[in-house]
Image (cartoon, rainbow, N blue to C red; front, side, top):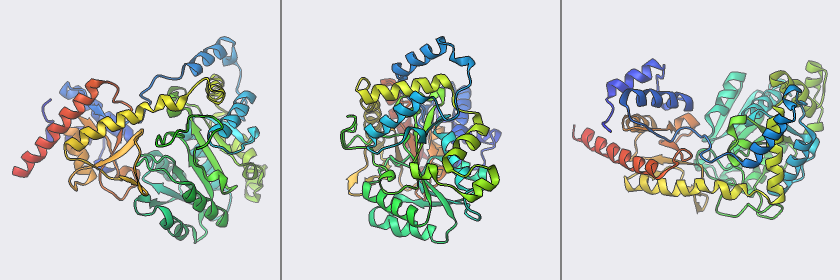
Length: 440
């Protein structure tokens, strides 16, 4: 392809009210790339959109069809979830996370996005004057937007320089004023793909107990640290979790990535039994219900969506049951992302790029759904701008609240050999563009 002119790219960005590409959202970048595809007649290499790049689990598809054929579409789903979903989720968490979770404390949600939004809202109403949320960054851009919508004070801690023994003091400094109600993080991390260790999670759990902060743990990519085999149900090593170290936690699990079931918008929230049953005077006064769990189900989720699709619950329930019983090895299926990551990293390295978050404590960062890339000290905004001129779309690390410079790479849409060939060609075009601009 020919390099897209600055004038044309600026025209598209202005038309979409993208004033600063460094802060452009995922969907803004998608929309800009699609418009540039229309104008140029060339397909982009899409590295911005974290959609599943693997076929949806057939276990879920078949069960959802059966449920619909059985006539459940005419019946409202129970807000707390159908019994089989709750039981199978409890077993799934025991099998792959290695902790006990009571079925009544598991609630289906319209994806993890809805679960996190409602958890944040509830956490912010537990105590007068506690409206701050800590985010371990870099992170999922939409998580930060949720805090903005809810009017919460978002405090970020970049994990780049705060791993291991440094994590505790840095977190405690943010919690010490007593205004923090919750903290949010993903593990593996989106987008750095670093993995918090059990020791680090113990630190988080200890501080959450000390300062009465609720840890909201996003397991969208659970068991996807492929440096160890977490595919065997009920056998260690398990998915690391803060749930071993505090009662102040809720886990969010989505069917979107682990089961490639994004289109049906189904996930779950699993709340510790002690937190589920804990009573808060503020909730009692506001809603007439005192317990955290009852309010999550009967107040927040009910008013928000009146529950989660019944047939989607049947589908996720079946996928969890098949995983627990050993009929379905979801971990082996999603290992495909590690292969794509390795292959695409080699292409980036060939053209002089380097990893930004390159270390996971004393190990190399693992290969998975995401990674982070930089080029010769360029600012993330400059890098993304020139990559888009060369037919590659991504988001900047600035959009993930990172203090580092570079872009987030998602490998899910690198589906064919042609996609990797195109990535190689476009990066070559990018290098040529840099050389020509340096000459000028």
